[in-house]
Image (cartoon, rainbow, N blue to C red; front, side):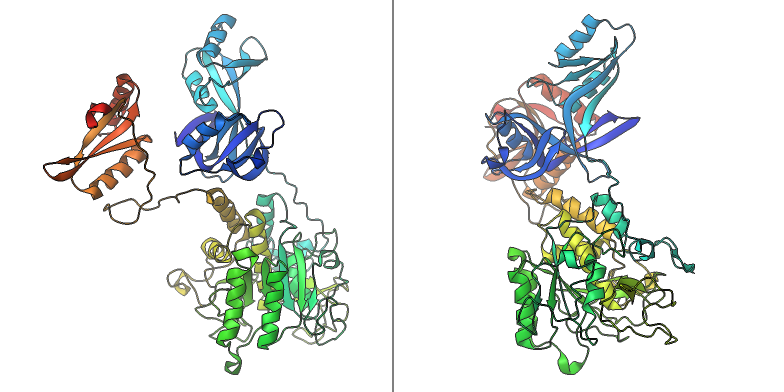
Length: 621
């Protein structure tokens, strides 16, 4: 039963069985996490069950769960399901809501319960009851369908549990409405400046999908200069700071030439504290690494510090496009080492700005194959004309070019002129407070992507750095002209504008698949050639099945087995023998204890256009 349709609410749900997750209830107060059969905890409580992955011991999920169900520590075990088109896990609680037809007596109702070994939990009125499965009952989803098909029952709906939308992401920072790069409503608050609705990074949507604003377990390192450690959006988040220039944890502050790190950091991780702005990952920890340098020794130190002190994401809004300062092999190795060996072997996610020089090649650091190279798009979903272009561009993210980003300002920041030269901090001269300023460039788009990477790791911390990069590229939104893209990639936009919501959804999906012994096969086996994974078990020569034929070519066996599994979702038995000096493969569908069960399958097969004959398995020895 890989798929089953059940009644739910006003409609029906088509459910598919998870290939890695199961739900377990412990006997008494026993801790199942410490048992030798639980591989990892996934959810503490869903429908009264602890959702876990099992140590498969080379067996499929059905057989392994059957083995675990009989263990002394386990009271009840259930499969976990997913509804079609949804990544939310679903657990049947074991209870079924039943409405009998008018006129069905209590005695007849009791007979229906006895038929499936159900227990009466609660009687609501003469026709409405709540029943529960017992150890001798079939799967509650199957029972509900059996009951629904009887003439006695008007409605039988299994009780299922899943995660509801918490609507808990209430962002009350007073400048949030100005942050169009997180949620673009089509207008810039308080200036009536028209922008393109939806031309944002979908960060607010990602928060709603998560039900929160990320995890405080994720650490974002920002390597830069000029961090204001006293800024209200940053000060509570600082974690293991380090200053390369003074070789201490005391960050250098007050030099008006160095203010860049403060706005960069705020775009990624500004706290949601009820005032000011909010970053893309406001719950992430902030590791300021102050003191950018071209020096090999300094480069080694900054990245090694991030690795040793637990940085998950490293954001770098700096670099070089001067050919005289390209990366030598040793620097390339430093970055590769962090991207491949950080996070205990999963790799630090390294994000670099492509640069603002309007060039047809990117910052040399961003060109490194192990980093995420970030270009800039605008509030109208166009290419920011300053943003460098090239085949190494991974992705783009919203920044200025039409309307700027609002970011934190260091207390010693003297400001810059905007266009007319009349305004030091805000493009339009409208004062939004002494703690903030307008900001932009790939310096802003890069930490935005870094914050989104932190959201991805919040939901799936087991992803490698390479997998995070892959998720970003596969979930990005194509913007600009389709002619800009060759094989899905644009030199301006990379694989598109980052979409945090889709990226988080994909990270959730991959989390469910992480312990699956065999990935989903997307392409059909057309030739019987290639690399396949087998789960071979000895079949007892007892029972009955439906034989469809005998084959001399092993490739044909693979093709038939895949087709039959797709059609009938049952065991396929292959008998391998010699005939006149040649190997012959006999393919049998099913292995049933009775001939009548095999005949029932034979009828299903005939309806599906597959001919076969009943075969006693002992005759195949």
